[in-house]
Amino acid sequence: MLEGKKVLIVESDPIFSQIIAGFLRLEGCIVRDAKNGLDGLKSLEEGMPDLLLSDLSMPVITGLEFVEEVSLKYPMLPVIVISGTGCMSDIAQTIRYGVKDFLIKPIDDILEVKSAILSVLEESDNCLHNDTDFSQQWFKVSQRVEQPLTDELRWHLDDLLDNQRSARDLLMGLMPKTDSQQGDWRLSYHALQSVDSDPIVLDYTWFMEGPMVFYMLDSGSAGKNGTATILMIRAFFNEYIRSQDPSGRGLIQLVHKIEDAIKKSSYASPICALFGILNATDSKLDVLSAGLNAILDGLGNTIIVRNDYLLGINASSICFQNIDLSAGRVRISLSEVGFTNFSLNIQRLVPSVR
Image 1: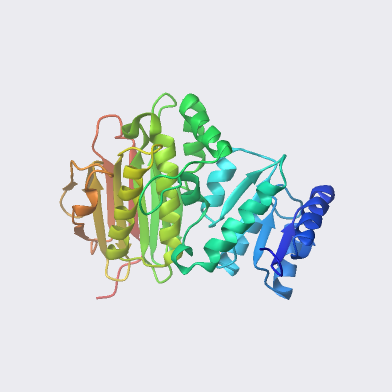
Image 2: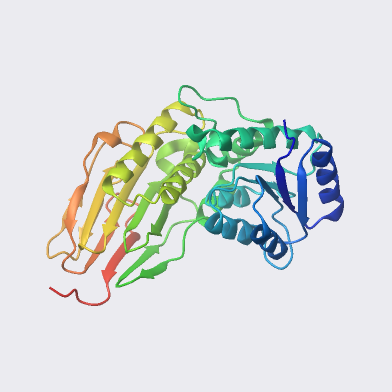
C-alpha cells in the first residue's frame, strides 16, 4: 500500500531516523532524510515527496519554524509531526500550519506510524478531504457523528479538563502579538486579565490587499470545555485562513462549520464569541456578535453590538452589523462585567484620499 510513495524524513535523532527510514523502505517507500530544517528545505527544493515526516526539536531552525515555512511554500504537502514533546502548546501551534497528524515519541509500535501515513495519504488522494488537518482529526468531527479519539489525544484533552491552570496558561500563550500593521491600517489590543479568571482569547490575521479578520472568545462561557472549544475554533479559523476567502460570506461559512462541530463534539460547548472583518479598501468593518457583546467607540457616536445567541446555538443565522470606518478608527470594548479591561483598536494611520 506504500509501494513507490516518496517520503522525506526531517529528524535530528539519527537512530530514530534510521529506524523509521528502514521500516518505510521495507514497505516499498522511496525515502530521503535530512538532519535539520534547513537541510529539509533544500531537499524539498530538489524534489517534492508525497509526504513529510518532521520532528519539532531540531538545530539550526526549530521544527515549528520549519513546518511554518513548509506550510507557506508547499501548502498542499501533507505533513506529519513526530515529536518527543506532548506539550499541548506545541500541538496547538502546529494547527496553524495545517499539520495532518501529530505522533508523540517514544513510539511503542512502529505500525502506528504506518497507520498514520496511510490515513494521511488516503485523505490527500481524496479531494473531499483536502482541507482536513490534524485539528479536525483531533476532534474527529465527521459529516455525521463524532468519531472515536486516539488514546493519546483523549489523554491530552482530558488533562486540560483536570488542570485548569495549565489550560489557562495554554490559552494565554496562544495570544497573538499586541500590535500589528498592514498598509495604512494598524491593529492593537489591550488585555489586562486576572490570573484567577478564565481569559478572553483573541486571534486575527491580515490577508493580502488589506482585509483583516479577527475573533474574540470568552473561554469561561464554555465551562469546563472552554480550552478544547477554543482550540477547535482556532483550528477551523486557520483552515479559513488557508482558504483565502476574506469575505463576509466566507466568515459566515466558518461560523456555520464551527457551530456544526460544536454540536457534534463531546469536547466542545457553546461559547460567547465575537467575529469581525475589516475591509481596508472600503473602510468598512463587519461585526457579528455570538453572545459576546461589545461597544464600538471612535465613530462619532457609540454603537452597541449585541446578540443573545451563543456560538453553537444558531449564531450563524445572525447577520453582520456593518460599521462605516471613514472616521479612520474604532475601539471595540467588551461590555460585560469583568471584561472592561479588554479592548481592540483599529486605526487608519494616514487619511484616505477622497
